[in-house]
Structure formats: C-alpha cells, structure tokens
Length: 166
Image 1: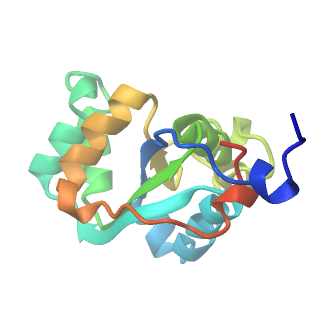
Image 2: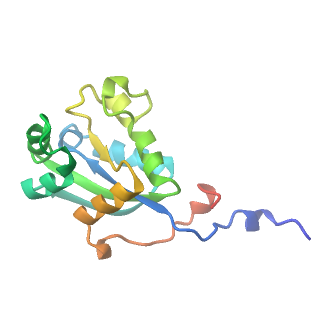
Image 3: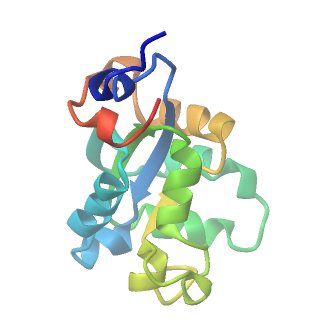
C-alpha cells in the first residue's frame, strides 16, 4: 500500500463537530472587550456559526439560569445579565465545550490562569465577562434558548484542515 500524500492526510474526516453557546455578558460589552473575547475563540480554532446582539429579557434570563433558582445569588444574577446588551454566539469545533471553557478560564477570575479571558480581564466572580456551556447536553439546551435552528449556519471553513486532524 502506498503512503498517503500530505494533501490526503490533511483532508478533514467526516464527523459531527461539537457546538457550544458563548455569551459576552454586559460587563464585557460595557468594557469594550467584545472584539477581544470573540478573537480569543477564533484564534483557538473554533468556528463561529451563529451570533446576535440582544438585550436579554427577564423571562429568557430566568430560563437560562433556571438551575440556580432559589439560590441566594439568583436574583442578582438575573438582574446583572439583563442590565445591558449581550452577544450570544454558537461556536463549533472538535471538543468545542472543553476548548471554550479552557479559553474562558475559571469562574472566579482571580483564580483563573493568565492567558484565559477571565484571567486576563476579570477581577470579581459577579463580573466575569463571559458565559460558556458546561457540557454537550447543556450546550444543546442553551443554544435552543437563544437561536432557532435556521439561525445556526453550517458552512465550510477553508482552513479547518490546518486546525483539526478530523
């Protein structure tokens, strides 16, 4: 059997890519960090497949953070996320949830590693700039809250073969 040529080894394999929801929170928008935050995910190699700027309603915030209902910080969290515009995005890639969470950093910014979004730009847990889905199942649920299926764009990126082996 002949060895594969370089171009054959760089062709992407057909497999479904994982998707994750990312929100640039109101503090990220107000501080003028939206472009930097988006750039971090692009530079990581994730592919943007949906994006919108919106003012989150109380209803959407309560559905999004429903798992925290009844906790002492719930009302403050809803008030914070609805206090200004956010950017909602869907990013796609191999292990997108894990890659995005590693890019974001720990929830408490002072504990986050330098080089992560929160580690570089955050100071307090209540102003941690960005939300990312915590699992595949969570991402699926969250994406459906913010985007209709037709708002998520399937497209081929020419440089995918340079980002992922598969």
